[in-house]
Length: 190
Image 1 (cartoon, rainbow, N blue to C red):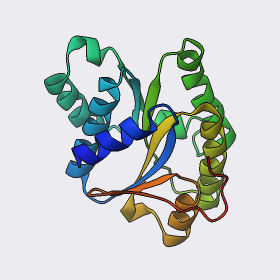
Image 2 (cartoon, rainbow, N blue to C red):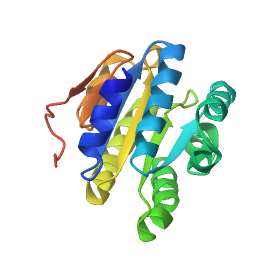
Image 3 (tube, rainbow, N blue to C red):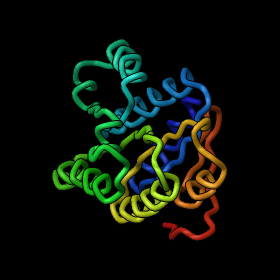
Image 4 (tube, helix red, strand yellow):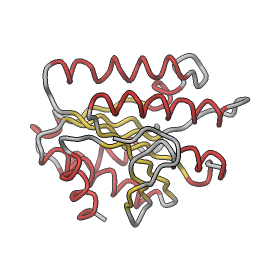
């Protein structure tokens, strides 16, 4: 899968992409995240990893093992609970502002950055509708910036209705073993 990730990152490096990762296997997920970081760093990009407390220690250990000090300085991490539940629940306006505020300094300094975000949420009413709206608005923002991000979702938590929405506001569909382009139904495409 490392070759597929590297090929995709090389292909979209200057044009950007919004990638939906629907994962089943934690070990493959983490290996794919490390491959994404490696491919991004090879192109001189900073990488922002938005991840949970369960996976982050494993990821940080792999980063220490596989990357130089200089590369590690280009890898930035944030807890995904802090990112997605800043107001104690999933509030799309807050998250979109946080995302924009987070990447703007890099864009203003012309420092290339890519993100990897493990999207998680608390059980709350109307969450799937809010997630869909968030992804659609994030997609519009990302298309304006030529920014590349992977939005990773645990397949065990995603009902088919949400998966359908996510497939319609991303450029690529990624699983633990493959990457394919998405032919969108409604969303604006590049």
